[in-house]
Amino acid sequence: MSNYVMVYDADCGPCTRFKDAISFLDIHNRIDFIPLIEADRIGFLNQIPRSLRFKSFHLISPAGEIRSGDNAVIDLIGLLPVGHTISKIIVSAPYGIQMIKFIYSKLSRLHDSSSCRVKGIE
Image (cartoon, rainbow, N blue to C red; front, side, top):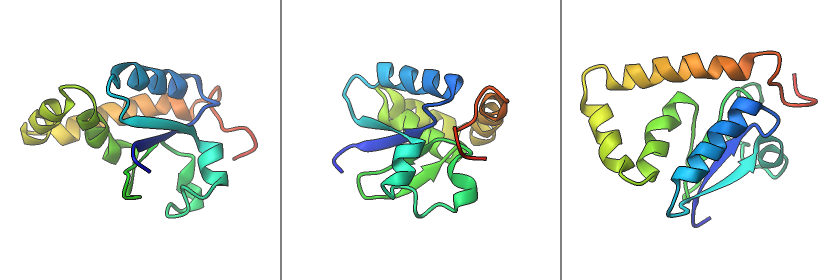
């Protein structure tokens, strides 16, 4: 892989809108996108326990390292234009990482709503 890969739930409206926003902001095309079902089928998520694979988005580095959910947000921000500076500010700010985790936990509840489920996976 030469790009990062963002694995997202294509059957989820909020998750797809999140992916679309990242795609729009990724003007340097550093991120490729693949639905969770496809990534699981081709083995991209084998390092992640099956029970956790469909709980959040995943960011896979060109070296194959995987970060998931709130642990991937700072890396994802860093890939976007001016994101490197923004991610440094967040990391260095008091409670910056905790704030990102809090915001992510609130937004990820949309994924857990009954309108957002991966078809065939419970």
